[in-house]
Length: 479
Image 1: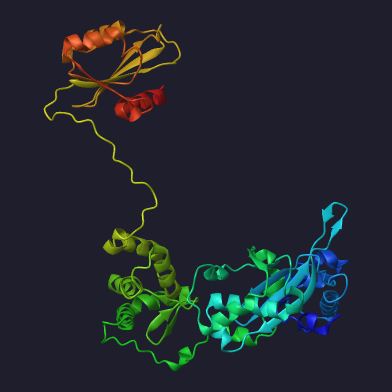
Image 2 (image 1 turned 180 degrees about the vertical axis):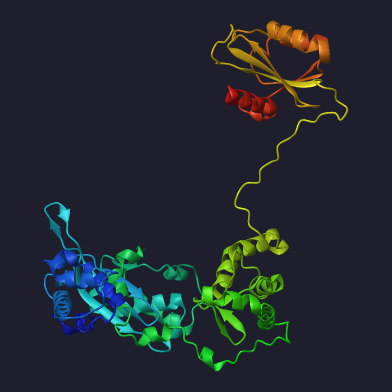
């Protein structure tokens, strides 16, 4: 077997953190089907990834690491290329390099197709100049480097080989682009190859992803955020005489409430440091001073931060300050911010306000009424239903008349005539649901002859007769 095919895996350095162990297991686990006894061999390394496990590296972990590493570069993991089968090139490009795995189908066992077998591994780092390329250029360069490395295998294939990547940055080159001198050379080199590009999920591209990152921590240190000047190098600039700055406002508030802080210092375990009081979580404690709180909101919400929203403002302020009820106070402040409310994205449909049935201001009692029936009640003194008549306009009073379930339109008119007409006369407007007793020919003819206007509710819309429905609920609850 050619040494160049397996150098990248054989030179894999010992993991020195849980993250490195997980990266190594992710690469090995993709081919665990070809490693006999994989679960027993990898058990010491898998135990290291548990949260409750204290990091350690002993002989059994080193043996498991070396065993898995050696098995990845030996048979049956690697196999000889078969030029009658389709090649699959899995590649992934990071900021620092490219990793690729060239594999082929493992044949069939009976009628079941076997997993792919890797043919060779490839990994290389980008030069300092190449690391400054755009993301789509880096992906294109990664494809080109992988193909050129395996040129003897992939050149002039009758059937196209498959390039599998989990980045969609290559889609940038799907559209016509104005080529530079560099990209024109890349395009010229690709003309010798017959290939297709397939986008796959990131979880299926684990081997190439592991090979595209360096094993050491040299490049990772370059990505860490470092403070060029330590906090101890800065003097406290909080001056009471400068209220325009947040520091000056806080210093003034803390000086004004000095006795308030001292009374609570021992119980709350607060500390005084250069004019500011801090809690055990190293957050500045805010006294009950509205001016200081408004100054904080001006700095973290109204100023250059450009109204980041409720959640982001709460997170930023509560990371540095604390006071009782602070979260609620900030929420109320943002609810009263005109700019935030004007630019707030409404994620729900605006509801049309309910239309209130108008009533003349000089309406007499029971000149506009609503009627409904409560049915299905236990029988009492020969009655099992209640006729509800509600004054919809003047007093909203209700009259409940016992009746039978089999009551008809004429009987409803008779009840009204007997119990309401002697005191209130005839109504001018009736609000009813679509009960057949109210919409019968007799009821319609009677209302027409007496000059009474009908307002019928639509189907499945009880809000029209909502006042009567609410009165019915009270009666049913009482009963």
